[in-house]
Image: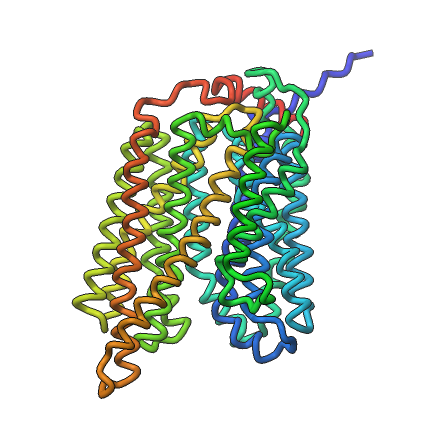
Length: 516
């Protein structure tokens, strides 16, 4: 009897189907990131229609704030759980919560239901950006990650740009419900493909590179961090949310400071801290964390205040103002792709980050000049956004790649999540402080305006003058980021990169694909 020939072992170097699994998984990661990015902007043009159709007495601002609160609070917890339980189960959980929240949002019949559904959606969406970036470490060797981080940044930029336009089209031709229901089949597709194709733990060389002691979740630390973030974020949104009188702005700030102090004390004493403070002892990690905070201020200053000027001062429609943000998003897309290529070519992160900061400073200078000399020319303001987009696009992959490169493998999840959380917090807090400054400056100018001046012209002039100061403050945040670039890596990356050698990484990817 002729003996049976043994079947060949499946690997990434054999059948094309297995070889393409990492790229298939990456395509699904892009899809989930696009959905999360769309959900941050798609409602900007749909909100007026929702306000007319939905009964309820809750402030409409809660529709945005509920998502922001939930998404920001869970970022660090997702990162830590990914370190302890694995990235795949956390990613599938985040997509599942996002999908369930989208269904609930689309089925909402009043504002209260919609706000609660948005909180559920945010609980999933908050993990999507962090976990998509983190999962790249399970799919690609260290020398390849910068390229794919750049592509993720490009996808984020494109989807943010088309969000308001897509929202307007859905409202006009279908209904606002489809702004949420559109997520359901796409998120379901991503969940199914990733559940099948994503290796359970492809980055197994971490275990070989360094010992992985038993880890636990610091639940008390998670509660303290959540309380601090909720208090501080509510303070940034205080003027829009009609909160009870007992929760004044100063009370919320005091609570936020108290919980934040308790959180840091807990992290110093906990055996398994939620956010290991030792990460920030590395100068490069502290630097990229500050860069994330500063870029959050720069990004949100542009996307929040410039549309206000275009709509209130120049009387453009929401869709028209969204089109004028296109250079910003195009710049983010181009810059992110270019950053990934330069990092892969071993361009020093410090040099690339300095170029990004200079571009952002140039942009704020151009916008301020346009507000001063060409206040009625929206195209001049729009053109000034292009260098800002290029700078932000260059910076996004740098933050993620450096954070992962300088962090221990056992803390890779929380090390990736913390800058994302800081960017969101920096954007929310920065916008709140800048909005308060803008209101103060406008009141001063309007009080001193001639009573014979037309009210509309006076408001436009006061808004334009106030925004010059606002963008000047944003430029100061970028200047501080430029100073922080001195602590970024200035030499060629070491081969180990915190994840084991590229050869070991590639072998582990093959083993993970075989197990999938």
